[in-house]
Image (tube, rainbow, N blue to C red; front, side):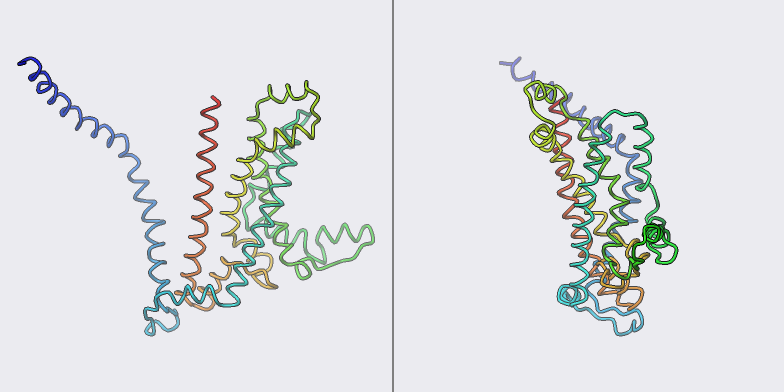
Length: 312
């Protein structure tokens, strides 16, 4: 009886001695990350908290003494004002059009680059190049080099074949903004889908070919189901960035002709109308929408990692 009761008592101090050292080791490995964490909180979270507080005030920079607390009135105005609702609808339409067209074109280019041909590396580099261009520079390129009605390349080609000379930005303003964004975001979608294509089970595809399956049947029943997660990831990541796009709208149309999206409306409310509270409320709604989309994107990414681990 004595042996059975003293053995656990003797083991207890050894266990308790190991706990502080394990915790100390864990903190030692995490300590180098603390400065980055503090920096991220100071740079991102504190300004957002300040924006959230300002969004509950009627705060016009031109009349600072008239500042007062209004609760949710700014949010109600954002959701009920006709111009703001139009900017929300423009944001949804712009995001949906750019994401869908970029995914379709990106899938076509990914299928092309998945094949072996001479000069594939050069073609891949050229196709990726638009995504590496600074957004403002890309918008200026489309506005002056392509869209300009007097010396733009589009009208130059139409003049060469005897076609009309339209003013692209004035006639189709939203389409002009969408085309520049599609040009810049198609390479991003192509890279994601190309990674998905290269992770396919080639033995399964060869077995399907041996069984007599055509290229269309393989694409429809094997490739598309495999790319579903990658398509979702591209759509979600693209939506996060395009919802917040400001450069193309500001540079190409200056928010005119019905192209003002929600980020540009926030800019107008803050820098032109000096309505800090109203602009902050609209900005908070943009952040909330981006967080919702990012949550789904993180779930898709985690599911892709789980699938890769299970396959390995």
